[in-house]
Length: 323
Length: 160
Image 1 (tube, chains in turn cyan, yellow):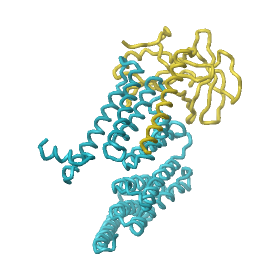
Image 2 (cartoon, helix red, strand yellow; image 1 turned 180 degrees about the vertical axis):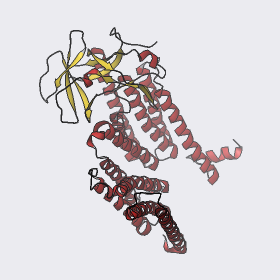
Image 3 (cartoon, helix red, strand yellow; image 1 turned 90 degrees about the vertical axis):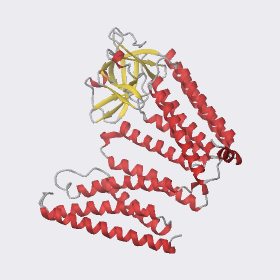
Image 4 (tube, helix red, strand yellow; image 1 turned 135 degrees about the horizontal axis):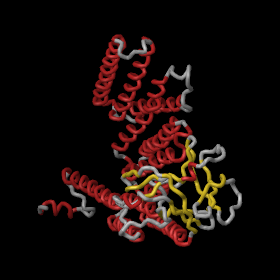
């Protein structure tokens, strides 16, 4: 460390460097360091050491957790290191429960683990004012929904579309709350990457039942029945897609989020068009030249049309239409 | 204020952890030992560590029809001390002293006892290959834990 950077890191009471490059490096290093240390702790305990007494394992994890909390108090809860330490403590809550599951054989990847993890860390997440902490909490909660579904409800219920609706609801509410509270001046929420991740996740979940529905359209009338909730689930997905397209174009102008929605729309149109052509030519043969030719034309048309639309939109936004 | 809230929440979390460990230790140390015969399924491994998927003989014996997706089955120890399926548990019914109730999930027509996995140290699979019974501990309130696996002599397997 040169004298200059040493001065930089000490010049500010929060130990935050002033130069952009230094700040960037500082954040990246802090983030990487935190995740690598946490990954190391997770893998260490995943080994399930027989030679370490269970109480020692509990003690190590809880000791680390308490050290993190002490660190939050020292570094202050509003500083980036403080927030990362609180996040680390929240991760260690899950490590503790994983070790607990090993010691008392409560079941591999049991949903109770993720459920308790989400319940025990919601308080810290609420007070954290840290978007990354919220993303962490949502990952845990989504994992709970998935493990619960596969362990307790699973295939016997035979209604996977319902699962997509539940996941869409959970993540949709989270994204809506993010946007609403950001409008209400909760400035700490203003990290754009959480919006992009939210839009990606929601559209990803929406596309599954939508595409499933389109592909199976016309298949169920004769022999078999459509899975329960498939139509409803596809409708929910379509509404989410429409809302995302509209909101990020007109309500909150965000070209990235809107472009992702446009790409999702393209996927749906492409699939629907292909399905229509397939049924219309009704050869039942995808390899029929007519099908391939028309599908190619449709793809060229859709892609160039949507690309043109996005390019226009971008220049409009640059001209000052956007806020 | 938020730091205070953080500490308060930490105390709650530590309290929950302490209580669950205390409860589990009590059950492990004072509970009644019950053996369930295993029906072997290949071990698997996950990020979380090595474990083997357990199947139990009581899952496979012929049983009366059961409509719901999960519930409890009542087990009774036979002369050799191995728990056998007796009947499905009806809410509120009283159990005799050598009856135990154990939770299961039913998918399609397959019954799965919970827990259906046994976690062990990475690489210790060879010790557990000869496992024949699951060792459970039950307390008076029918809470139970899987505490280990036993070989055909009913001795608990403890890798060195």
